[in-house]
Structure formats: C-alpha cells, structure tokens
Image (spheres, rainbow, N blue to C red):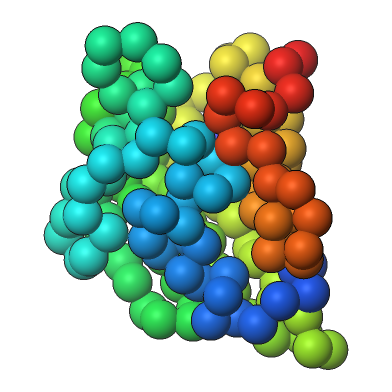
Length: 144
C-alpha cells in the first residue's frame, strides 16, 4: 500500500493545533470551509467542496488529545475509500510538529500525486492560520 507523508512545524501550542484538526470548526478554518458532522471518536465528518454532496466522508477512528487524530475515509473519491488520514502531533523546541500520513492507497496513481501536493498546501494553510497569518481553506485556496 502507498502513503502520502508530510511533516510541518507550527509555532503554536499543541492544544491549539489539535483543536484545529480534531474539530469540525477547526478543520473548516484551514482545509474546506464547509465541514459537517461529529468530531468525536466514532463520529462521521463530511468535507464539502461545492456540489450537492460531500467530497469525502470519514469516520473518526482515533483521538488522543494533543497527540493524534485519525480518520478512515468511508465515502468520496474511489482512491480514498478505505484509506486512513492521520495527524500525529508532538512538541519540539516550543513548536508543534505535525506528522501527516494519508495511507492505504492501492497504487501511486496520478490523483495520489495531486493529493500529495494539495495536502501539503492545506497543511501550510493550517500553519499560517495558527501562526497569526491568513489560512486559505477551500474555496479560497490557490488552484493548481
């Protein structure tokens, strides 16, 4: 199985980074502005990117406050279904390091390469918003 991996250091407390990843309101601040659902363990989150249905739906499969958030994709692009999206957090030198993994891709198709670029972009959006800058969640993101 294939995986997308990124590491981002954010000059913000781990609790703030965790809240931005673990709550629908937090995710709406940096990935896509339209997030619906329940961010609790076992809850389901819908991520909307326009259109008449969510672009992806994930089940929250792991929550370790201040340390880990994990989602399992249950609906969305065919290549995403059954994959897991994990955010592992740790304190390093007064910053929070986010180790991001989108695992379980069956093969490294072109869409995976596209998603790797987009995930990197949105993780930098997360960083910008938490460091006092301007985050750029969809639909305000750069299109490329």
